[in-house]
Image (cartoon, rainbow, N blue to C red; front, top):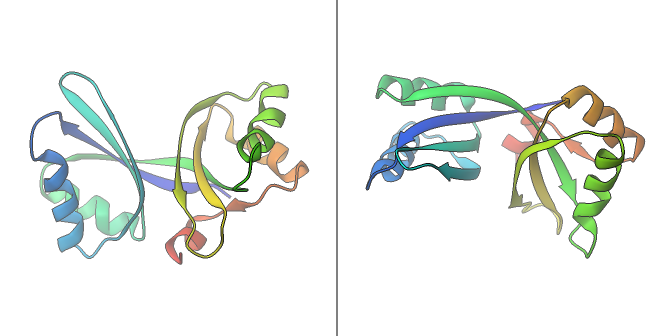
Length: 143
């Protein structure tokens, strides 16, 4: 029940992020969530979009290096300790969070967190045991 994330490698210079988002706009791709991590020379833009293939095709056509990564989207209660309800059982079972980012869920008051784990299968099992809602790619596209 993994979701897919688009990763785009971009130069760390003025206007490159706007160029990527314009390409996606022109391809009629809607961005649901994003995270940008940078180094001195380049950045990694991670995106959850409504059309992975459309995004990938449009960006590659314009010369960008694009990858698709499996991630897990989880609904997190918007209350003190909501994130710990997710992280504590994973930590107790030695599942490492490689990175994460969040976005608001317009259909309810809870947030959606995007996780990249070192062991997705183990993480999914633990989340199921804890009755934590995992959201698939199609559900994200329909938000």
